[in-house]
Image (tube, rainbow, N blue to C red):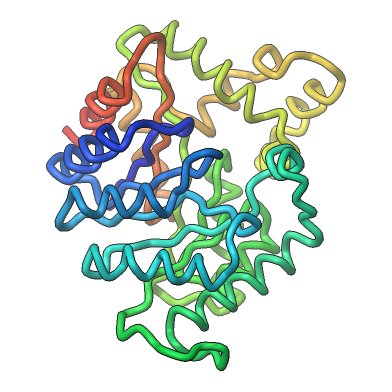
Length: 305
C-alpha cells in the first residue's frame, strides 16, 4: 500500500525540506509533496526535495494555477521531472478565494479555468502545442487536479492522472472516484486523500490542536462545501450562524476527516481509507504544541511501523 506525506502546510526552510525528503525516502513513504502558501513555491520546493532523494516521488500539493502562466508551470515541472528522472507529480488547483483576493486575482469560473490550464500544461509538456518552438524530450509528468466536487472529479477523470481532494469523508471520496471513472479515467487513475494529521502521545493535546487546525480551514468556502458534501451540513450551518468553527466541530467530524492522537491508534483509521478505494493517502502534518518539522516527521514515520 502506498502512503505519501506533505511538508508542513505553512512552509519550512530548504534545509528542512532536504531532511524531510531524505527521511521520507529512508522511511518508506511513496511520495512527498509540497503545499503552496505564498511566499513559498511548491514547484521550487519539489526541486529541492528531488535533489535530496533518489527514488521517492516528489511533487506539488497544490500549485495555484492563477499564479503562473501555463507555459512556465510546464517548463518548471519538466525541469523537476528531468532532474528527478521521472519522479515528478504536478498537483494543480485554484487555491482559495480569500488567498487569491489578497493578490487581487479574479478567479472567473474556476472549473473552466482549470480545464483550460490543465489542457495547456499538458500540451506544453508533451510537445503537442503549436506554440512551441522546441520540444523537451522527456516523459511527461503526471498531473493531479485538486477537486472537492463530483464535477471537478469528472474533469480530473477526463484530463488528468489523479485527483487531490482534502477534508473529504470516505463516502464522498468514493463518489469522487466514481465520477472520475465515469468520465473516462484510466485503471491507473490515482484517488488520493488529503488527510490532516495531528500526532502526539498526548491525545488531549492532539484533539485540541485538531480543533484549532481544522477549525481554521473549515471557515474557507471550498472546505465548507466539501464538509457539506461529506455529510456534515449541521456543523457548517453552526459555523455560518456565527459559532466559532473550533467549537462547532464534532468529534464525529474530526474522526472522519483527520487523524489525531497516538500514531499506533491512527493506523486502523488510515487502513480504512484503502478499504474504501483510496489508492494514495497524503498525510498533511500539523504541529501539536511546539513540535518542529522534524518532530512531526518522526511521528509520521511511526505510522509505517
